[in-house]
Structures are given as C-alpha cells and as structure tokens.
Image (cartoon, rainbow, N blue to C red):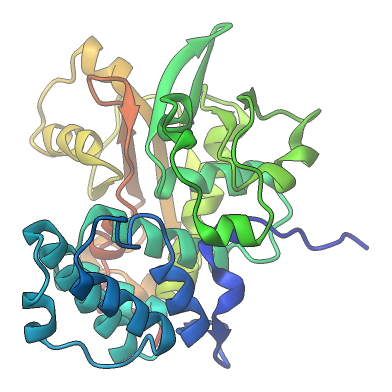
Length: 337
C-alpha cells in the first residue's frame, strides 16, 4: 500500500475545513495564518492605527472592518493594501467554499492583485491534487501559481522557479513556514526518477526544476495537472494530451494558457502564418478532449480544444489557469458550489 504524500504545507491547506464534497471552507485559523504572512503583517514603522487593526484581526479575523478604520491609516499604500485585503477576506467569507469564491472572481473579472490570486490557486491546487503521489504532476502544477524562468540545460528545456533562482528566497520567512518547520532554501536540482522521492520534503522550497522538453515527462505531467484542475473546479472529466507540432492543425477552439499562448492562438484562428521565432517560443501544446460531449457547445462536439503555452521574450513562463475556467466552449457553466 502506497502512503499518501503531503506537500505544499505553506499553502495553509491544513488550516481549512472541507465540506461534504471535499471543497475548502475558510476557518478562523486559516485567516489568522494569512494575516501573519510577511506581505500582510505591518512593518515595524507602521502607524498605531495599522498596528491596532492587525492585532484586532489576529484576535477575531472575521470582525467587520469599516472604511473609516482603514481611512485612519497614515500610509496611503497601507490603506490601499488593507482595503484590498479586507475585500478578499469578505469575498471568501461570502462564499461557501474557497473554490466557489475563486470561480466568482475569474468569471466576473473581479480585480484582485496577482499575489492574492496566485495564493488562492496554490491553495485550491493543493486540494485538487490531494492524494497524488506523482512528484512530476505536483511539480508541474507549480507552474499554475509560480512564474518560471526557462533555460537550455544539457540540451533540455528546463523550467526553474523564478523567485527561487533570483535570490528572493532569502526574504523574511512566513511565520506559517517557520511554525511548520519548513526549510527556507536549498539548491536547485532538475527533477528526475532518481531524485523524485526528495520532492515531497522539499516541495515548499520550490527548488526543483522541471524538464519541459518535447516528448518528455514534464509536459505530460502538466497535462495531467490541467485535467485535475478542470475536474476539481468544473466537475468535468477531460483528457489533456501533449503533441509536438503546430503544423497542419485546424483550430476550431483554443485556450491560451498564458498571454503569449493566447496571441499565438489568435494568429492561428485568423489563419496567419506562424514564423519560426514564434514557433520556437511555444513550450506546451495540448489537445483537451471532453469525456462527455453534451457539456460542450453543439457545433464543437467531437472537436478537440487546443491549449497553447509559450515563452515570453524575457524567457519566463507565467501561466493563467483562470483561462481554463473562462475559455472552454461549454454549453453552460459547470461549477463546484
């Protein structure tokens, strides 16, 4: 019997409850840990009003916060940050589950800082991948909420966590990370069969690179992560298969997995010729196929949806998993509650 692996403890998933369907329910413990994050906690020179607001919320994280309380903060940036934070907190509390709150954000185009959105994706993905024992799939899923820097290493296309390799991992550690006794930093290794068992204890370091070379395990693992994301949030069973070439592809529907992928999809849709430079920027190409075609727009039933991810000019990869929620050709929205 294979033991279930734990990972991404820094997401705070242990601090939430689950409903009867396995969806995440916000708790006071989670909100308190969220308030303790270094990007949320007031700096030492913060005004007394900000220090007092933060301390009060640590005691009762669901208590109402009025515009007048935020207006008392001296620093205009602090006022803006707290306004956004309280809006997010209230949005989460307004919905029955974290998943439902996220779906509402992306479907209605609500403005939320990328930092907060990525933190929600981190949390939801941890739930969607619960019980997954494939380190390659879990590492590939990091691409949903952690920008990657791409490089050629020994003839392979390798993605490494941008923040980790830029040295920003030396900034103050979250109290949650410290509380859980998680390691703060480690060296970068490319994930392979020999070292994959070490991924689990290192998962919160984000210090293992992923080989995204065509026809290798990394791309298929990303496809599996995409399928799990769609199943968890939309209750749709799909298969996501990588393929190598854009040539001779008749695109009936596509979803760009990032900005660059969307631009390439737009060009293909318009019948434009894709140049070699653009073609070489493509990182991942997938065919997404629905197990149940009755959920798809009638004119597209039986047709694959093409998914496209491409490298930015600065050799980074920033996926937008929300595009998979808003971009699939569904006859009506499927949703978790």
